[in-house]
Image (tube, rainbow, N blue to C red; front, side, top):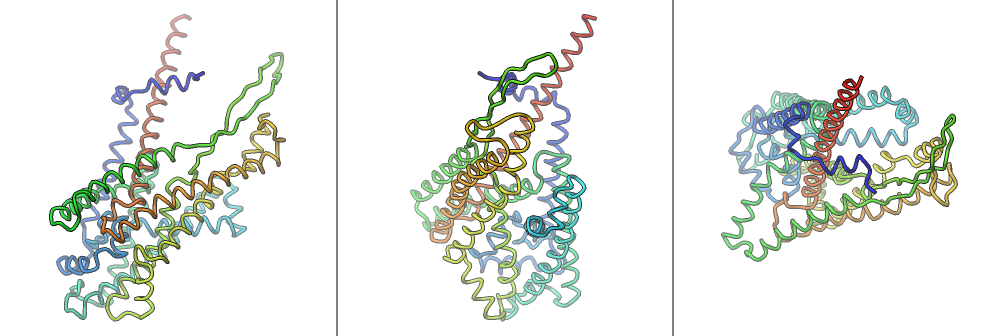
Length: 450
């Protein structure tokens, strides 16, 4: 039987959107922030020759730089002030979360609640600054040597002044994006960092589709194969939606209890465990760990770089066995790691025990925690396999059939997941607004009777 909350949710309609003033403000703020992000991606670094940069980037098309360019929304191709995107922040977040599970003082901070979370966020920001400085220096040096032997250097006036200005500019751009993502999270809709990444991918999709159709027009790809790619992309989207909504429901029983002179009947409920608890975090984390060091390696290894850098970039190109293996390992690792971060079986079992709930056939307390951990591990295996399949299957098409990166599994996974989360956030705000309306009506009726 549907509950009152379920009935209310089913009756939700966007006709109530015009009355939800707070939601409209949040949506307009989010749209405005994303527009600012897109405008920043067109502001070039000082001292860059755009035409020479475009020629050099075209020469290396299809490599690792294209994949990094996807996450930055084309900012890397234009070498804008936000060329590094939000990836240094994500990498710093990975390091802080890993240390929070290993380093005892940081583990203690995680247990301190809001104050501990603020300290860890501050460490993440410091780590972002350090990473951006190192990566900015690597990109500056790489730009100076990139194409220099062919007489097509993208840097107008190489030297330390260019390097320092590039580091400062990229640092400012990355820190601005980090601040913008936090503002979207607090004053807008949903996770600001994910929305920024999604906006960059979505902005490049029309160009990718145009390039795909152009390949069909010139005969590089047959029209039949283009239809297969489109149908496959739609099938992947449907599969992602199905798997993201899949969950394992663990039955929870509440016994009869007496409060004062009143006897409350026993109740039954369920504990939903998502098949993919980690959501879109594993592919983003795995990509960031692979992409950022390789970006610097590819820049510095273009012209006259060390031999080992050239070997690294060659071995880790798209479709290479080593790249596939490391990407799959990263997705699987972060699937289990992030699931352990967001869901604590011991804490959940303790909360159930405090409220008198129990899993039928399982003793409350430690036995329940062991059972929840067992179930969560099993469904996470399926979730990790699903993420690995969705992210790696299109990689073979990308490497062997020259399919644009923006139609890959990782990009589709990010776009679909963030879109579903954003829609859920909007529905949540509409539901809260409808509840507020019902409460106001109830108060008016009560006041009228008095």
